[in-house]
Amino acid sequence: MQSWQLPEHIADILPSSARQLESARERLLALFRVHGYELVHPPLMEYSNSLLTHIDAGLSLKTIRVVDQLSGRQLGIRADITPQVARIDAHLLSANNGINRLCYAGSVLHARPDGFLSTREPLQVGAELYGYADVAADIELIDLMLKSVAIGDVGEVLLSLGHIGVFRALAEAAGLTQEQAAQLLALMQDKDAAAVSAQVGAWKLDGMWAKAFALLPTLYGSRDVLAEARAKLPDLFAVGKALNELQAVCDAFPQQAVHIDL
Image (cartoon, rainbow, N blue to C red):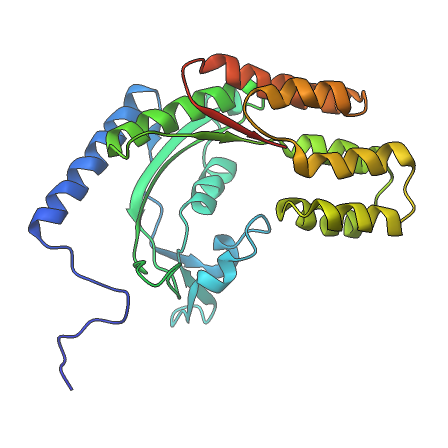
């Protein structure tokens, strides 16, 4: 057996690629710093329950676990830095009246690769804004994201925007249970309009809500989708608020190619 071989989907980064990677990392962190984001360095490993989140159920399958020889508790090697930064914000920082701008850059390790050509040890770089729920926070982070992508020089960018608030408002107004809402949302995400219509028909929803749910999978495309949604969806305060927030984001980036998906 050749002892120098590496595990599958794990590779050395050789000098030319390492220079490019480090240069991109430095430029991204400099960009974040200029915009007021403070750098944090979470540990590579911590107790596994701290690393997992209900928001991303698939994260559990990506996380490699080992037993801590000191405590006997289960440790996890991070597969995503985002939950760690959220923990730092929630438990260790209370500056700026609860508003924290944090950024990070580091390797993560996946139990399985995302794809055939993917590495199991990607470098993750990101920025997080906590404690500010206004749409201005979304605009700030989208602006930072677009500037970050420009540093990566990936070419033309299409900004795709959605708002779960539209679906949630309709689900609540229609009186759907959590199980029904989750089932219907899965069909929505597949854009299976026929299946959505069949499902709401089986539940015998009021005609107004059945029509609205059947319409949602078709509401995607250019910025004009927002006007169409205002004209055709039920006049609910939460729906209007979500559409207003999407309009504010669109207005903040008038030259950016945008795709709306409700």
